[in-house]
Image 1 (cartoon, rainbow, N blue to C red):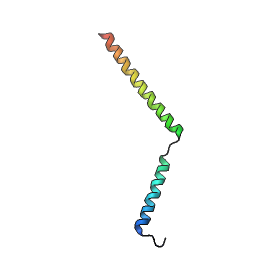
Image 2: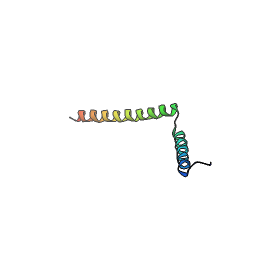
Image 3: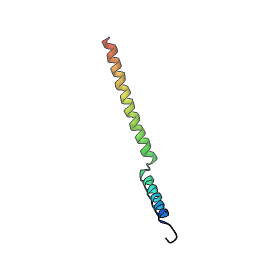
Image 4: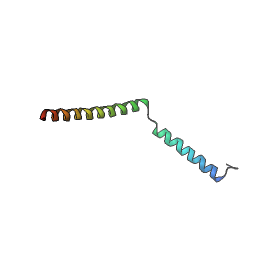
Length: 61
């Protein structure tokens, strides 16, 4: 690549690497939905545990 300085070549390589990494990290819509559902289930389970603890404390009093 005649006429391109070392800095320009280095920058082009960095940009290419960034694009490659972004493509690797892309997740499909389905994967994102499933991940959100798992988080919601975890949150629901946590809230259920808190509710049970509160009920137990109330019964003890």
